[in-house]
Amino acid sequence: MYDFINGDEYAPAPESTSELNVKEQYGLFIHGEWCDAEGKKTFDTIDPSNQKVLSKVALASSNDVDKAVAAARSAYNGEWGQMSGSDRGKYLYRISRLIQERSREFAVLETMDGGKPIRESRDIDLPLVAAHFFYYAGWADKLDYAFPGKQKVSSVGVVGQVIPWNFPLMMAAWKIAPALACGNTVILKPAETTSLTALLLAEVIAEAGVPAGVVNIVTGAGDTGRAIVEHPDIDKIAFTGSTCVGKQILKAVAGTEKTYTLELGGKAAHVIMDDAAIDQAVEGIVNGIFFNQGNVCCAGSRLLVQEGVAEKVIKKLKKRMESLIVGNPLDKNTDIGAINSKEQLNTIKRMVKSATKEGAEVWQPEGNVPRKGNYFPPTLILDCAQSHTVVQQEIFGPVLTIQTFRTVNEAIEKANNTEYGLSGGVWSDKGAKVFKLTDQINAGIMWANTYNAFDPASPFGGFKESGIGCEGGLHGLYPYVKLNG
Ligand code: NAD
Ligand code: MN
Image (cartoon, rainbow, N blue to C red; front, top):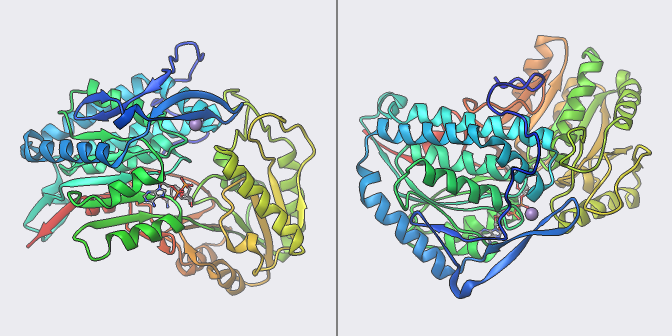
């Protein structure tokens, strides 16, 4: 398990940004080469901390997607499709080590393009990205033993992968590592606001000597994503993003032979029982909702606190929130960085306004939030009803709703009263309560007396409108293999 407090050996700290050379323009990575998009079209990516243009990125058309799919298909039919698992593993180990070597560069670029605090990209994202490649490298030559009772394990083919902006490099790793371990080739599209670390990863993949066409990175927005999803020569779609787009993708693949996995939104309940260790629970709550500005699918965004301790928990939580630093993502002391886009910032503002309108109380600590850039302060919404918009819908920001409950059963009922089912958390000193809550809350991932603990060996995926299929662990291999016998 990754040690969040002390970090680990995977990623050395970035010492300065001067070693980072952000290019003025980035191309598409197709068949192992960099190329312009059709008509040399580009779009801007900004640094959300100051809204300045960071770089220009190629805007891939459906013809560019065609080229990428053709490259992936020929790589699949060629050397890569015939390669032994142990040889594929060697490439993945190489990629993991190169990511470690260049982790400072990756962390700084991730923070500049995306807005997350450098402390997080350096100490959490990058180590987990390297660990993910290491983990799946280890499976590459063991696939014949991974599925007992199955005689034949083969790859799926050409995979189209579309990812969101909140964990740009980590989502790329979650997609690419298992796909390659199982012998597939990929076309990956990063989110339009955070393309740069996926493009740096392409550089690393080339440096690792991975054969041309095995990994292709195409950049662009929804239209480029749609061209991937609708492409007739793609065998499988792996998507992470909003439930709304997930539903469109489900419609697009219906009636085709494509297989699919969808990792979608969440609205996790974070349950505090009155026998919980309160100080630890408060740290867990803070980590659960303010990590990555709350732009986290599995964020503990609905606090359910037992009546007897509610006042105490809220008081301690407010005090703790007063110490959180909102500001420059590149500053090592920053706790809450910039919100990735103006659109997302406006969504958060709109949701918080709806809370006041619907009769809840909004609380924010006094303190300095930089006026320039996309910032939003850590926020509590008190006196919430289950029917409030902020309790029902994903806010995807540093905003925590608070409700109270009396009994374990009431907590379970409230926790499950949502269309989502991705994650949840429980704090209690009593094993029986922990087991009852983690068993009966209907979510793919449940944490007990901790929150947001990730490990490549642990499967991650949601129920209900939070998605279909899992990433991570042995479970994460299933979408990328065909099993016979
Ligand atoms: P989004 O759905 O708007 O976009 C995700 C990706 O899909 C982007 O690359 C986008 O360009 C692309 N896209 C947009 N329209 C498309 C279309 N019609 N066809 C194909 N591709 C299209 O999501 P977002 O705002 O980037 O990300 C935030 C969402 O992602 C949140 O809802 C969050 O909960 C979810 N998320 C889920 C997980 C998980 O593992 N379950 C992880 C991270 C984020
Ligand atoms: Mn950006």
